[in-house]
Length: 294
Length: 316
Image (cartoon, rainbow over all chains, first blue to last red; front, side, top):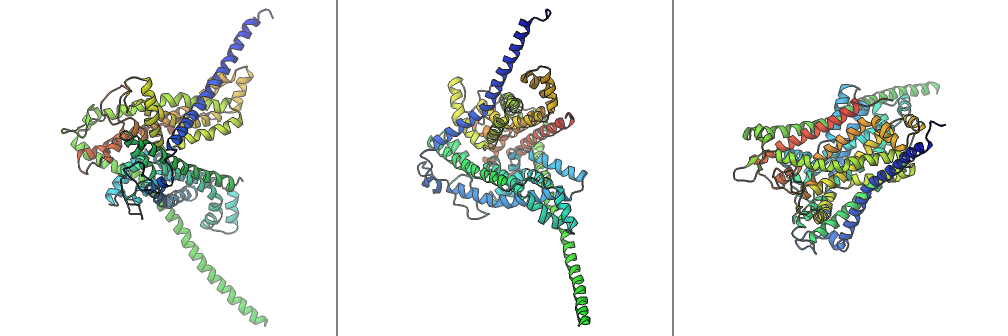
């Protein structure tokens, strides 16, 4: 034991253990630093909105007088947008997922479509805005109406829906569909009555999460030229509209001129975040309640 | 009686066969119709890609007829509203790169440290609480981050850094970094947790501390996944729009001073579209040339991320 200097050994060992402990602390701090920013953001926004969110604010019309201004127009606009986005993305997303997973021949075509969707998911949302502006607003001459905005947002979130629907379809065990074929059912019968019902909770969860992404999107709407002016409430798919994020955008820009607008923006943010929270809770509820493990 | 019954049965059977045939031909039609219909739906995703590339290219080509492509990509002067409009994209590329760099300086180390903590140090319970909380960060709309950067972070930074403008590239860059943290953390953590436990245990058995295991075993083994998460983070920062639009202003100067206002490619697009540039003007076409450049930048980053994570993935 004489060649081993216990002192030196212990010193090195202790130093390494200490380093490990310090690193663990630093890594933990890094992890919660993001959460601290989140907490500050929420506290700040909520405290700014106190006293501004009331019945008048929720149901009122836009006004140049900050005390009188309300966001009913933006709430209705967002609701109309959802009326377009929900069915369109559901049909496009789930249809595409079924085709890729269950019909497309494995090989080039399938991997081409798959790569294409992965790339679409990485396209910046502002580019989708330009696509919508060029095709829906200008070429089809829809103007900056609910339908144009809804279709643009649908294309934007479609890749997310496709990917999550594919995962849900893949998680349905093969035994189920094989049993169905064994009973003499055709392919579409099997899909309609066995695979889709089993995958539905997963598909719904993914669609709702994608939807909450669409509701918060601002960039494509700015590209479409969606206004936040004193426009009448939208009453149909071909009416001009404004949406909650657009309202936040304009009020934030105006906050430089009139300080009250910052409070209006904060109050609108709280409404938007509550809406997102509601959607996310529904998604989590569906996942916990209906998703089966096989 | 028996005869009658037989007769009835026979009629029933032939009727049943006829019925079945009808049913079969109907379900035959649906069997063929459904895949065709689904294929049509699937083509929408391909049409979207074609639509993006076609609109960007066709309008950008018109722009390059008016402004030489060389001048566009090497011009450091951008002044679309002037009497003698100048269209050099370098100020925008500069703003985009600088904001992305700031974001990655924030998100890179914090994201990576978060990933190490979650995959190597945290207890199961800790991980299960922290991960969903972090994911909330990614679900906050970017407009909210923009508001936060502009009305909260900028005034604080102004108190600390003298000469910081009301709009500057520093504050949105930092907030953009915060937005990207969960993305880098979660993708890197996925790569690190897929490193097999036997490798960790081997190192631990040799007397390594957890820190040494993380730095010398897990990170090298998960490197391809970590790098691709960084590349995706960069792509995300390049394409981010609302945070920079609100908080970094619209100065088109070519500068490296991060305390000053700068414009990115994305915020230029917002400015020109919301200014309602009338169709046919050079300014209108410049929109598409900038968007095309942005599209190519992010596409390269996305393809690179996929390539790295595929090519260098270690198989265990």
